[in-house]
Length: 335
View 1: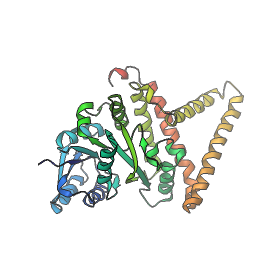
View 2: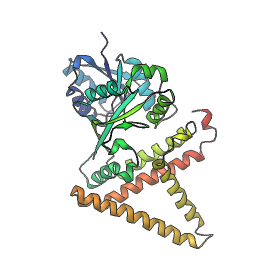
View 3: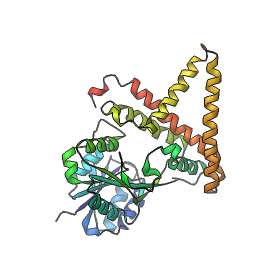
View 4: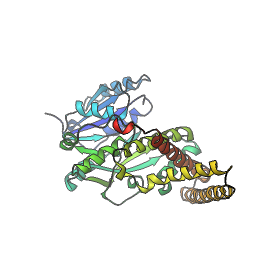
């Protein structure tokens, strides 16, 4: 008999984190013989596959399988994992996350109670390392100035939303909506939820569904992450322009104004004062928020690292978003 629940995990070179995820799966309160784990691996070469195989051999009470994902992109991993799975409900997990022990049961309860096509919950964002900057990045990622109106990062109020992290899907909706868009290297989950809503489905956020998510540990990796988000968000908007939200529009607007003022320095003398005032206002707001968050967390380093993390997120997203628009000529036909 096919299990009612399939856990799908995109994965590539996650030897340091995959064990923590699998341990969290074993700790789930849902019965093990009703779950299968399908890991879509991008041909890892760091020992990830061997670690999965060892764990599977040590825990025969749960089905754990690896399927190949030679494209090494998340939407392809999801499509391959879903195609190889058999469960009535498909729950996406992430190799950088640790779901709470009642995660699966909470997802199933929310699906049943709400009738939603997809449900998800809150990220408990934690630092991925012990450094002060890692702690500051985690604080910024969970703060409204960094998260905007993305309720899954901080809100305790349940309700219908545009998107949720990862997601628990009814298989009939996956079959109805079709595969994930493999031309989008990021934002594939947001775009998929847009398609669900256009097909008449509901996306539901329930803060009792909880998982730990480990933020990036340094500014370089944070910048690359948010640049990737911004670039592919702009490409997604080629198809769904109405999905742009204020929290996503502000960083590119800020970046565009900064760029115009810098260019205008040689042509228009007031540009210097406007630029200085804008940067000072941004520094004051982010610095004040950093001090407040530092006091709240009892961590002095957050006061220093918080503004740097915010600026990295906002400018990384903003300039990459603009670059995605500039380079989007002809891309609409491919997406």
